[in-house]
Image (tube, rainbow, N blue to C red; front, side, top):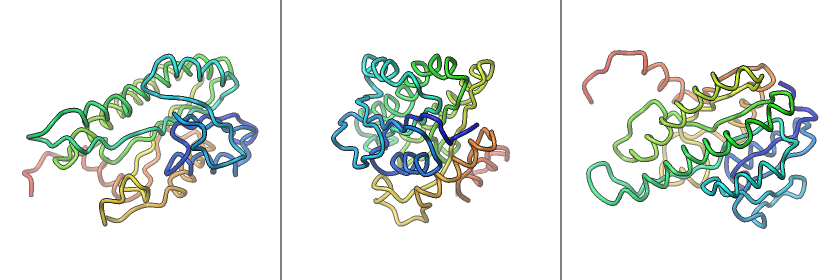
Length: 230
């Protein structure tokens, strides 16, 4: 997959990991980078194209796909923590919102842009997942479940879009040093490092990025027998 000269879209690209993706794409020679956000005035960089996009609104997604018909790389980065829902008590609102943004939002954008990618030669679809895709989390079950669902969706998209020549890449990381993980003192990976590893995967036509030790350990553990909780 070529990045230099490509046209890309990054959802939620105004800050955090999304902004790191946008900067990496620009730095690697992308001809144009759309940054899809609910509020275009929130985009701080003058060398990208702010595009109004709410991934939870089907009309907004359809309008973005019509406006960005020259895209050959789509990065589904927009996400939310949804950590307000406890495992055994409290409202399900946070978990529902996490599923709406992380899972259904990724699905809606992928569905809308798949024909665009096909018309433009196949290109690539990148989904920002998590080590939590493979780990049930009692402290934030709604977020973990949304990422597990998003991982399943990514696998389905990889199989379905292969025939049109679209490379589908799943990016997994543990805690990334952004506002979303400010609540924890656990080891964190830099957002720019995640973005650079993703660019490397695109250039090498690799389907998966395991950005840090936490994500690599999580995936390896999936193949092991289930053991009693410690």
